[in-house]
Picture 1 (cartoon, rainbow, N blue to C red):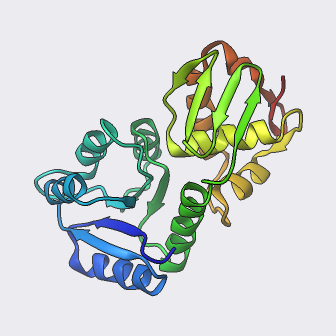
Picture 2 (spheres, rainbow, N blue to C red):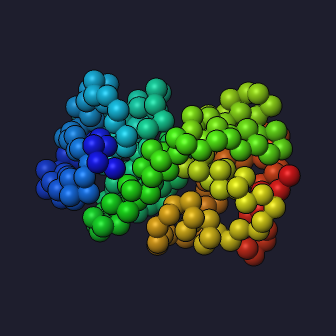
Picture 3 (tube, helix red, strand yellow):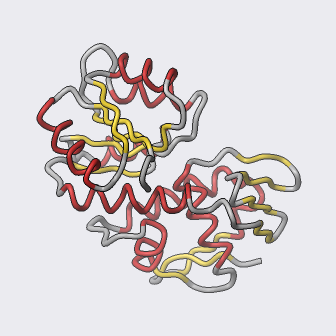
Length: 224
């Protein structure tokens, strides 16, 4: 991942330094912003920012506002940091297009694992080809999904989840297995994360939502 740009957005200088120093040791190029307005300017002027680590509570423009602005033009992966642990905040983040959600305090090593997992999938997928099942066509290199020829706008994590389902067509998948495979790290959350993403993904698949079946007591199965 050497040379990959990451933007850290947090009004706490100590927090930015903690994350910055760890990311630099991992070989990333790190850009910093102390508020949402500054971050938006950097994002609009800098080229090839691969991922954003974003705090919620900031002056001038908070994390929710910045997230909404970025999602108008970009699907860049976003990890949101927050001191809040309210389920409503987590669900709001997923609704607005957050790809990962980390509650402070957190381990820099865990954050780094999440960053690495996301970037391996986004940067390392250029040589991969297409998936097709039940009228759904996925171009993994271009990160595009179409249904019967019509494009579907998916977040990064929704795309990954659908990809995992399609690659395991006909196999019943437990929530734990989905978390370990799609999130690609030891996840300390619960089934709510999976259920939230599946619900959102189904809402975007229209008539194809029925291809994702609930397997009671286990998890889910994509079946054509």
